[in-house]
Image (tube, rainbow, N blue to C red; front, side, top):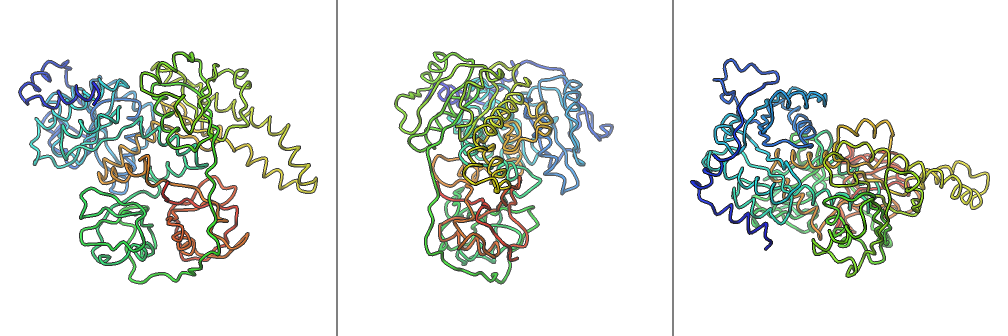
Length: 588
């Protein structure tokens, strides 16, 4: 147990009396309130009397705008909702900052309160007891400061509201995943945690290893496409999962939350797993009320392929462009997830000695790595000359992050500029070298073919950009029309919103981001076809994938930018080509 965990344990062990003494000593801020599309004249002065079944957000950080947007999308199907924000910040300033984001709230109202989340009166003003979910944001990247603050806020909520009077649950953004257990202990079964930096690290690595996965994750984590739902279907009790998999026309079963094993999620169970009373089915669907089980199973051309084709798991060459407070975490995940022979190049203005010291402080010793060779490069990611010194055309993936820990860099435009420079350099090198080689290989008459290969080659490096401020970069990204860009603030906000809307989702995400277990993968269609083309239904593809212990969740046609998750008309016969791709849930 580390020093920080011991410190948190001490905080948790405080009595309610001593805790409230500490809370009273916290900085007091004059309270004021602001309402969007609300009239507080009948609210009793504090605005809390009408608040019920709403979402409370405690704290303020760069993820807030994305979080409010996601919650508004989740409320859209209900005609809108209410979000109450409590932060140690001037109300007018909060309103102006959020107004600058020009959010489409789709009927949702946002209420702003200035106050301290440690103060019982402030918590009562936002009616935490009546909220369906309360989200505690991390206001600093310092793990000790932020996670200790989270523990104190959870304790303040528990002191303010009796456990059995709390209608909703608490979602906490934790900085250090090692502190999750202590934060949960502070609120017992009311608290669900999201270790933001750890999840972003896993997302970056998964997307770097799997082309196109950034778009898949963005679709699944957001509320405007298919997402995870967990529900009991008593009429399916006694059926094997192999049959249940084909029971839904508008959803795809992914796993089971097992009633006999409290809070245990089993993703991609065996076909012969029998659903028992109380089991909840995990599905990918468009909406909670958009799918229902069918009484009859679809007709499936269940043809076993003659040979189970293997999937490649080659060594990777990855460029990590930038250096931040959580770079050590990403390097550790890369070491755990890559195969032997892989290389990770670190390109940053940060001195090599400083990087090595940071890694050593975290107990990371690259000389002892078994899978990854670490290569240090010094340079400015915003400088084209420095970028041109790198073999950019040789990397399988490029992870791009703002360079440095300074908070001012969070609105720095360099990541977008760097992304465009890298694409430009790759494109020029492709046109001078690879195009000529392709022409020689295929002949002058194969122009359309080599143009396609050039387009594929220019996208061989998956650039996953961890922009810390989504709003200042999103428009530039859209204008640049660059695929495969992951905005970390958006991703974390999506996860926080999903867990706020359904706490059971936290168990699913924990399984998907575990070091071992199941992940999303892109599979070439040729694995499932008996030739270059074949006419099959999506159900047929799903059936063939079961021989490989995989669940097919969607597909992406060759040269199309966007995957189709949980496709409609699963029984319709379509022509599939060997160069199409399928998104599957499979064991690592």
